[in-house]
Image (spheres, rainbow, N blue to C red):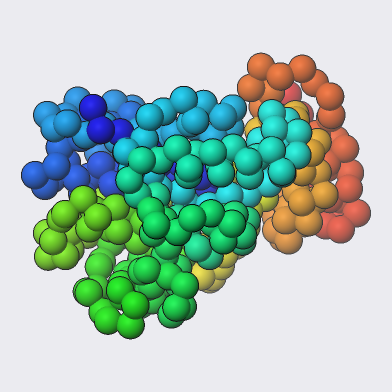
Length: 310
């Protein structure tokens, strides 16, 4: 099969779901492996009828470099998975190998600083770059047209190709949406066909998912497990729920991530006026840091923060 691999430190599950929906509802019907449960299919797998296989590639343990990719898409690179890679240099080296090994085209978010820096060092023939605002260095550019739902206008150089609507929240989902649209365009779908699909696409479960909404409270579930992702959720809430009092109930994910990114977590979590911390989810790791270490440092900056132990 011809593999299309979507990877990146943030947004790859959402981008995979959006891409699958657009392609699945067109003449391209890929077999798809999702990293999160797709909200429409209620599954992590879809069996398609075409020669294409859409795969969410896992960068956390370098397994994405085991995939023979015809086309690839990278949402971003961030300082994550350093428990495996040990340092940023080895993490970036893994992405470099992934780009080089992609056979035909590699779509990259040129607004991601680490990814932007990497791409500059590589041959440009198969790299397709996109970003917000106009830049002579991007093949595709976009503008955000809506402060709530992700509505974007996409340009090739300085020429508009169209406006695309969705019901996804947040600026970060604009990047996921644009990446998926570019992938569809590069696979030969028309602008009109894609426009008819994006309005009905959905993020996977636990991606800013409203699980309760009544006149008393709105509960939103999000997988955000990295300081950058938590910051994106905070900005999303600030922009779309500014009149409401926000409470963050946060469970750190992995001892290693908490320890390595401790200062980043302290910086971000201290910005939340109402913070409830619970015990770290181990993900089968051995304990090498206590959540109390994180909590005590946050408490100095935010006396209102609370910790709930088992």
